[in-house]
Length: 479
Image (cartoon, rainbow, N blue to C red; front, side):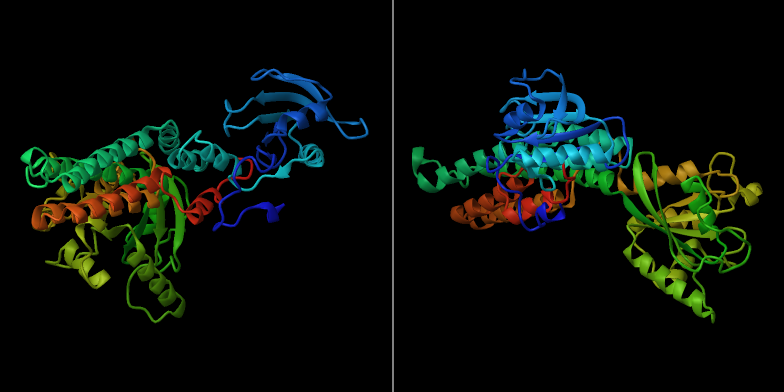
């Protein structure tokens, strides 16, 4: 069966070449198992399989499914969706039988005997795309909805599937097309009505409006990527600062071993959690210090590798002991990491703040100190927590979401969408320079053409076969 799955570099075959079939429900024991067929012979196969002469579109029919010798394989429902009013745009049959794998495989084998071929990964969705039933963004949203790790991600994927993200992209494409028409007119009819279209400000104004819209959609797409992929967060600090305790607090369970012995954590430990709708891929690391212990040194090397790869770094320190006299959290960060990480990548976590309650200002959750003011002045942020009591953990999660600019109302997006939008923005910037600096109409037109091509890649208006193969090859078989 695996040999029928298209390689990532090959798109599924175009619709109409064969009737395809696959099990569309998860493997294992279940109440109902669904086999889906799509193609010109799907209807005839259903008639032969059940012994019935006709099916009414969009009405369930109870049937028995027969082997060639007349023995019953199973019994269940048949649903018929006549093309083009179906998911793929072709005639589609769904066979709903019992969920045992033996019965499903026997039924699928019989469907193959009657002329269907095994569907490749994502081939049903590819046929829907190929028949203009959905665009590439909507097709990807199907896979994203299936793979969603949070309710917010699932909701956003469904919104993309319904066409919200595609609508934004198509509106931008229309703006680009109209802009290209104005530029082409300026090139082809430079003396029309004695107006210099390239210098009268109209094209520049429209171009700048389009650039602004691209940046807005790009910001939305970045949020959508966070919603889909989450962020990689590394917990780092000195031994016994509370990194493992913080991991356990965020995970809501005892995932890491916590003891009073320095150097307990000797390797990286990963855990994925969803907090406030944001997926966090957490990595606990060995405490950073000089040591002669060979195993611990290997763990520290792995910790430093994880630190360089983190989207967000949580520097955890023990407020009761980790700061030497007259030192600051920022100085500690420089000591631990060799250099001070960028403010956008670093959150300072002051652990065991409950033990310093006598120093807390009643009007603020911050520990009052000169260093705290310095932290804010330099654009950094410190969150006071207690891994023992859980105090401040909600503030930490809110600060993480704010740090990356996350909110739950984003439309789910992928890395390739962001890449295409950035290339579109770059082409528009080139067009703006050619227009305002050089008044080079032909070069403006070429940059706008490149921008349109890049933007069209998102919905599939302009897509290479190897890109389509890679996208649909990652889907489930049966979808």
